[in-house]
Length: 315
Image (cartoon, rainbow, N blue to C red; front, side):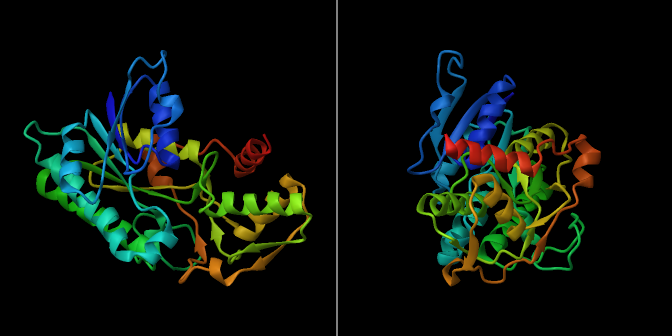
């Protein structure tokens, strides 16, 4: 199977490409403007099984060329993925996340040779917004409360409209928060880890942080990749699937675990610049639908993920 991966140079994309290659699949790795291929995508053992191409989700011609290059399946990861970046420039977030997804699905549906494979459109659990503190299921209403979440909800609407109108085999995925090796410090877990390591080196007793009271359902990126690949082969077109552990921890609990792993005693101090507007207090997912459809369950504990990240930074 040849798979087009958009956003291949991002956090999840790099893990996904490596996993696809290990499974014997060929990859067309679409990377954004200014991005670059990962070093481990090339080598004599891969024998040209990764082809890279540029993809600008603000450029219809670039999107159309990528659609023409799609093989047997598409995993659409490319997005403006930072909530803070979307807050600073909502217009660009709408252009990239919603408009880019609509353009990609439209281009795939209009190919002269019909595209028969599955198009996995990666959305976000943040589309559920603020609700009572219980695991969210796919039947819950979508009520985004940030520009990022709103654009992701719109990307779902655009993709599923294309499925209903053209028969393009769209499967929507709503991953809950995930982390792991290689994630940028613009996201909360690696950001906290980076600050705690700096506190230990500088013998500081405080660490700047945002609101640590929200409860989040964190997964390891490796389990998220496994879920995507399962849905690529077994997902039902026209359906949305949560990818979640089903259990949450507060960000303060994660902070405390990182303190212990890093070996530092530090107190978090709220920095107003790190606070999010309309932060979701409780975001935990019910992945029963995914489990029943594909047999997927998470295999990596959050404790193991945090240990791996601390160990990697230590080296």
